[in-house]
Length: 144
Image 1 (cartoon, rainbow, N blue to C red):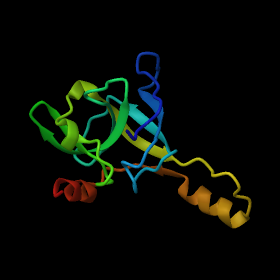
Image 2: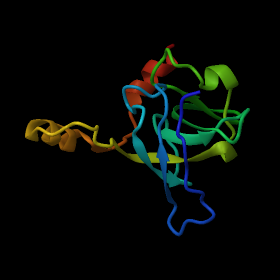
Image 3: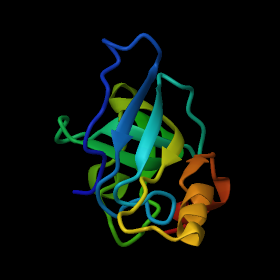
């Protein structure tokens, strides 16, 4: 199942921020395998936000999904990659207590072997980006 590999637990953190690493293709093109995420724990959620949550059936597994809508009992979350699966269409509504936080920022580590100035500049320009609430993607996902 694609998703973040690690998290910083809220209990030990002074700030409500943590880091997660993405594994798998479920959030392509927004997030890619290997991306690092800055997660804001306890942040207020809106439709279209990218969130880190505990899988409802396997709570030791963390997943990254986009909030599609609010429903009775929690949030309906969907993957940006329609072919990857592993979202609310498989496990239903996610209760509030399983949603850990909102993704604020993503960082792509530098691939090995990039030595030319052009390749390094291209990486530097695209490596770090904020992750915004994308309502157009959310509408597209609800239509599936």
